[in-house]
Amino acid sequence: MRQMSIQTLVVAAAPSPSILVLCPTEDYESQTSCRVVPIWLGPSEATLLGMALEGTRPARPLTHDLMLDALTNLDASVDRVEVYDVQQQTFFARLILRAGDRIVTLDARPSDAVALAVRQDAPIFMAEEVLGAASFPFVFRRNSSDEKELDEFHEFIQSLSPDDFQE
Image (cartoon, rainbow, N blue to C red; front, side):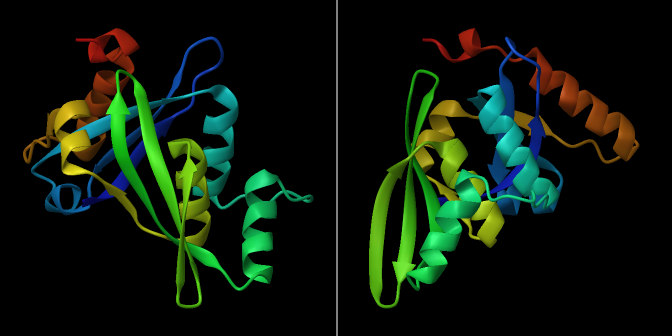
């Protein structure tokens, strides 16, 4: 398993899919090149994840906040997220919880698992096989301005479609 970092979240209006982009943490930190993994999300999932990334706390708890509150009251926490499989465009994840000395593994949608991990600052991991099967290369150019490079990256992400993942 490789630790992953969130590169960006592209939130699109329906009916277009939104995209969560992950990259191996050590590759992203080197800022030379990395393999990016786009994960398609629905608009609701992307909005909730975006709120978590922004640190937005609504007046009333949303589902993810409710779950974390329940976990906290049960003396449990999110230990990590593992994205362990991909089949066509569908990713499979596990939410790993820690309750004292006990580890609990739950099947979860990646969007929900990542939203919970972001809220608890828990790491996200991806199986090597998934990274190899679902990633695309991205090269950071050292001589370009950061803004131009970021624009090119966003253009690349927006040019992706679910058909790019079909064999």
